[in-house]
Amino acid sequence: MREILDLEPTRPRHILKTNALNKVYPNGTVALQGISVSMRKDDFVVIIGSSGAGKSTFLRCLNLLIRPTAGSVIFMGSDISEISGRKLNEVRNRIGIIFQQFHLVRRLSVLENVLVGRLRFNTSVCRFPLSIIRLFSKEDKEIAFQCLKSVGIEELAFQRADTLSGGQQQRVAIARVLAQEPDVFLADEPIASLDPKSAEIVMEILRKIHETRKIPVLINLHHIEFAKQYGKRVIGMKDGRLVFDVPTSDLTNEIIEMTYGETIMEEKADRYAFA
Image (cartoon, rainbow, N blue to C red):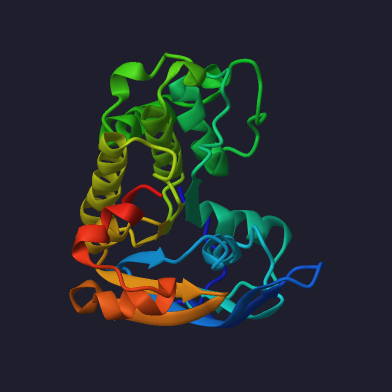
């Protein structure tokens, strides 16, 4: 059964939002400047911007992997900016995130990696034993298999994670987050290191998760065409600032120019597709 965070009892209008979020690193680098963004349950939002625009810092602030310097992060109607301890762990479990680097335990099997996502429901399980599969319930194992089925690699359940291709490893990472039963799904450049076919598969999986499980998705991309194809909204960031937030149907080359500083014509779009 899900743990319950002490959130306000009424359903909030926005599941996740930030108010004037700022982040200044100890060396003086200003990574975020006054970012205010909100997400509803039916959102699939893509953030675009050049490297160093602040996209990754922003995503990591949302589940407090990075603490903002100022401003607030509101999750399910409650300010989580200053939480710590058990409540912080609970929030991080409910705001799932995947990364470009996958972050799998390479010596564990695919199924064992996915079962790690069930740790939020079984805090007595040691995090990285030689074999964790026997320590989980039959129900947890069934859920893990279903998560693998959702990403199309259930046949690889007992294969070691380090024997998989990059695209397959990213699918394992997605399945692991699904096993957490998150309320929000964040993805930080999840296809940047993948070949075009694998990238398309991962994006289709994220869209399917959003549509079938009703989970809002927020994803950082360099891929302009994928942003147009999959996003319901597109957000542009530049130099740590929000420069636009528009429905995908309103995204034009002129708007994109506000982010990248140059006009992107259709025939040049592939220049950004796999940068």
